[in-house]
Structure formats: structure tokens, C-alpha cells
Image (cartoon, rainbow, N blue to C red; front, side):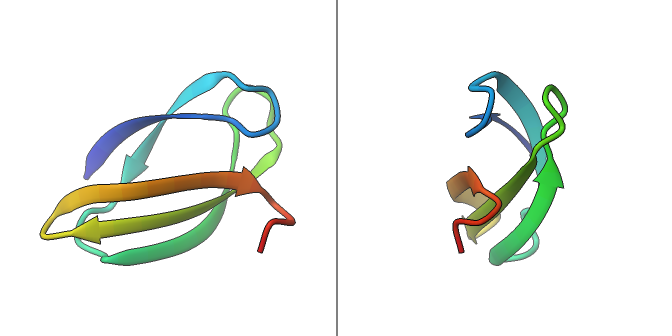
Length: 61
């Protein structure tokens, strides 16, 4: 697991998320720990390292 800080696309607060670095591509929704809005995460991992995290509005598919 890798701990990363991202900015919520709704309230703009910085929040910490845990990234499972054993999965190369991830696409899931998790609620913001500050404002509770659903954040759509798109994550890419390469060789156990988090390369890219996109934190989008839930409807941004």
C-alpha cells in the first residue's frame, strides 16, 4: 500500500488515500473524508510505484 495526498475535486481539501500498488490499473469511487462527495479515482501503478492518480467528479467517466 502507498499513502498519497490528493485534492478533492469538490471541496478542494487535501485528503490522504491508500493506493494498492499490487494492481496496475484501478478505477473506483470513494467518498471524500471531508465533504463526503463521491470521488472517481483512476490510478496507474508501474513496478509497484504509483505513477498517476486522477481524482475526478463522480460523473466524469
